[in-house]
Length: 435
Image 1 (cartoon, rainbow, N blue to C red):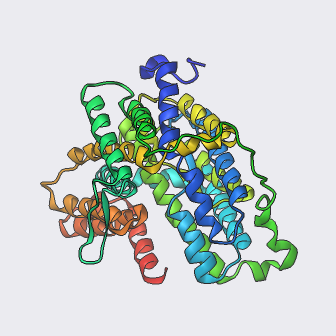
Image 2 (tube, rainbow, N blue to C red; image 1 turned 90 degrees about the vertical axis):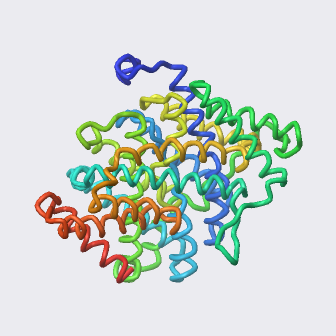
């Protein structure tokens, strides 16, 4: 086991991997409850989606750990689930079963282009500066989510956002969590983020800000209402009626968002863990295959697009360096099916500090960008700033990729731009214009 995951070469051990896998799980456990609530608005069964979310996350994460050997966890993606419910089902009037079919098809397409190496080829063609910018932008985005979840930052009609009520119990607990986690990390304690979550949870229960679990084991809901529902349209309609132009646009959007969200997330986590070599991600084809397989599997189970989670950075910060940590995270998702009442302790106020501190860690990639070169600074800046301001990783990447060829050509460095980047410029412009 240790030889397969290269523990010695990567300077890790079982303790670090288990702690890292557990930390990643705690940082992203919120999806077990948020995803069912969002998809329930699309008319789906909440209990079934809960099970589908946990099982899809477990299978995808374990595949990532065993096949790609990376400490990167997968689960139904935030943003993609909102697009599924509010844009596709409610906005376009597409039945949720047909929308699931769209997710399944996008997953199959991803599997094909991952097997032939197209995804890896495109990712490796992206300049290092934009990858670093994507990592930093995702860090700011994650920190922003953490600040929102803690209600340290709240909405404002006058200024869009403003500071929240720091005296509110949940917000005060989150502030405490940030401080204790920062102290632990500053002291150089490996696993400081994990211990911060534990201490914050305990303090929250003591002062009544976090509920004590009412029971230890709960019944596992039935998966029947959503399992295989993606194929239900075939029993009612013909191929031509199902794959309309509207659904094809939906599939392309799923492809677009997942492609670049995953690319940015994987590179950011891998860069933090020190895996990037010569601007390339080793075993990228296996990591991308794991991601695309998880999307197809999740659609069959009954959930929106499953993708790599930036919260994996929490596990890396806690010591995870190999796929063994992903196996731990995947197993915990399965365990969560039996002990779901215990997850009530891990509230948004508890996980928010981890997200904020991870944002700090990821922002360190800003130092790798040559800000003195304007042709580099402009696309990097647009990539970084757009992610939190538009609440979309994909939009930030798109804007940066549009600006990069433009500034490089104007600077007389057109030959240094990979042909793929010119192609992506056209794709992204068309995306903004038509989709």
